[in-house]
Image (cartoon, rainbow, N blue to C red; front, side, top):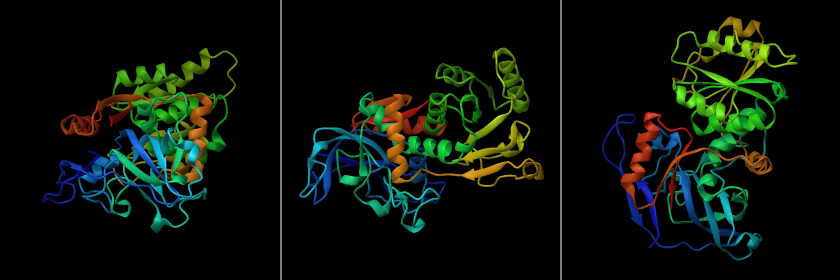
Length: 364
């Protein structure tokens, strides 16, 4: 019997409540005209799933299956479907709807939303055995990846791709210096991997020496602990030492771009490190919803650019980039079975505590 995993309602104020998980038996769906029936192989958690359970996310649903990111196999195609060649092939689900191709942002903001656990998409989400989707809302899984790795890609990957290439592209070339803050999360790791793939020097911050060491193994030049009050000075010294040791290096030890998901005081901290005209590409603000923007940033012509997810066109570009460079997303841990609710709860606990290095995945 197919199943889906949702949240269960209980009393509580937004931010104080934490809705429990609930498993439901459901009938197997049938694809309609122009649709595909996909059997989900794996689905991944994102921070938005924590916010949904805390009622801190818009339009949450107690009926829609959770999780926006999934990889599965096309089981059948509905009438008139032109994608019959995808039957029995693994695919990635597009994790959002309502943004086709405009590089500036969704064509109609009111229609843009992410699938999984929300009212506008009652039957869409990765935490279920089967899903029916329009044939235009899948991309073939890059052949070098497993379904678990595929599930780790969609939201984090397109966010990373847009944050790096749409927002900071003008500063990027082989030898550029980019800082990726808070290394360990899915987006930050994919920014690191994509930047390394095009020859960029990547530096990282983290609250863990182990995560910095792991990032270096993935190609980062080095990193510093953001728990130290002097981390910008420490990073500047690290970059200078690397430039001195790098024979033939012509670029000064300044950052061309910062890709950040934390917010807080990152602008103030990074002003001395950024070259004039450098870019801060910000995809999240986990430390707080307000930033300081001092006059020093204005005088140095620093650009602050917000970004979230990406368009359907950018999603296709991102998947092609992953295939071309054979990038493998980092999976921190996976558990087997949609019916193993206790084990899935453990993944949520790990995500809330920030212990993971990479993505947390449910094998369905």
